[in-house]
Structure formats: structure tokens, C-alpha cells
Image 1 (spheres, rainbow, N blue to C red):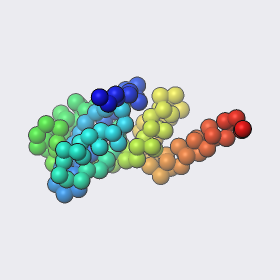
Image 2: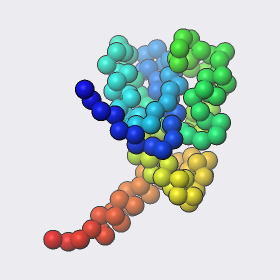
Image 3: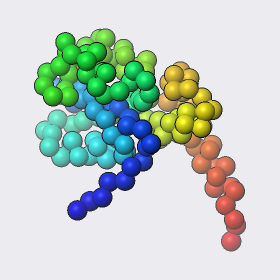
Length: 142
């Protein structure tokens, strides 16, 4: 039996898309989205990719299912529409490492999630890397 560890204090919402069908899953997790992707990939004939990760008021799975109900195919899977793609682009972070760094900075009160999204994944990845370097440099040298 594989144990799941809670990574995030909040449920985070993710968007995963099939490369061929272009269908988008709007789901939630408290573990890594990469782990969730691997689980979904096992049962999918379509190659899947993470296209966005978000959290916060108005960004819950249930709220987004209601918001895009007219695009629902079945369960948590939705048709790719310009409105859904625009929402994902404007309200989520694509890279999981960048998202994790932003999530903890939001929890610390340093930035808001929308400020993090506005920074863009490339800048967030850079900040995450710098933060990791600073942490490593503070470790005792043997």
C-alpha cells in the first residue's frame, strides 16, 4: 500500500489535459500534482500534461466545475474552450516547482497568489532556484 503525504495545507486545484483529445480535467489534491498525473496516466490511453495549478478563493474545484458546467463532458473532464484556456492562463501556474514556491510565499504572506501568477512561471522558477541555493548555502559545511 502506498501512503499519500499531504504536501499542501489547502486543497489545490489542477488542470490536466490530454494531448490528443484536448480534454481538460479539473481536479483537486493536497499532494503533488505530478503524483496525481502519474495516477491518471496509468488509466489513460492519451498522454496527459499539467497545464495549470492554482488555489485560493474562487479557485476551488467545485467552483470551477460550476463555472465551466456548460463545457463538462463527464465527471471532472471538460471540453477545451477559449474561455477555459483563458481562465487557466490568467489564474494558474503551469510548473509544479514554481507553484510550490509561490504557494509557500502566499502562505507566509509575502505575496498574493494573483501576484505570483502575474510573475510568470519563468520568474517563479528562478525565485524557487535562488531560494533553494540560499538554503543549501546555509547548511553546515563538513
